[in-house]
Image 1 (cartoon, rainbow, N blue to C red):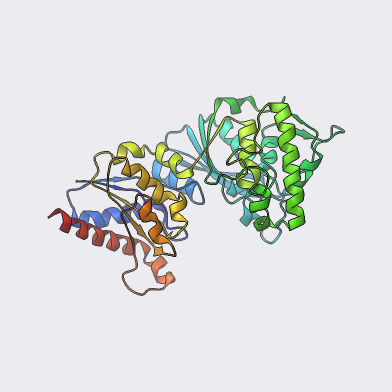
Image 2: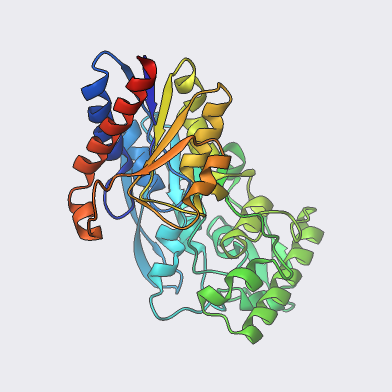
Length: 377
């Protein structure tokens, strides 16, 4: 019997690698002769770098970069065990937690994210995976592009200041100094939203308020991004204003499309592809996945559903073992997952669940496997 174990992390509690190990122990208590294949997964959001580096035996890199408010911050990224693939979370350099109570998408910048890309180029990497969730910015990726050597000028030829608000004064874009190495690298961008850059479902209107934008600021930021898109189309010949995903991370999706060779894809699909999940599931009898909390959001493309969709290509049953089940957890049953259970064996506090996480995961996996064994007898 071959069993594939492919969990996300239980965020704030147990890493994806530790979850997989605990599940393996539970499996082997019931099926000691089983072939167990462990694949740690993520969806491109928080924890993706840690998961990919730990699972592949990679290397952690820490840089001091320009944070979203222009102040220096320490940001980590990783090089996978193949030595050729970098993994970056833009939130590490340009994320909302870095601004605290000083949210201001008028001035926040993605410059630090660009510096992390440059750091990967300096190390000669051939492929870069970028997760672009959790941004504090609304600058259309201009800061990122500026770190790569692009210049954004007003009508008098002066460099614009940082932030999305300044794009209202953008008159020209100079890419003559853009780092040529970016053309030799494959960028896979984990993007799980389909918002366009501008308009009522665009970056400013949908995500601006959570980054501190007032209704008046939202309107001005949207107009500024529209001006940016128009100038970019004239300069670069690329239209991104209405492109699905261009509005992700305050328009960083648009910036990556404009200034790099980027492919925007669902985050979990990128991670599964990099980890050769398609090969791993072939011939399996069961796939076990899981996450910290399964609810209505999981069915919208989080890691367990991503893994289930791949497993279903081969008709393999999938069980999701999660830390907790929230409203809409059963929605996943329409998306390739055959059963979903919580690790809690009795009424238990969140603190107890976190403290005993690995043990509870192991015990829940054992219970699942005993039920499977009944079916097999």
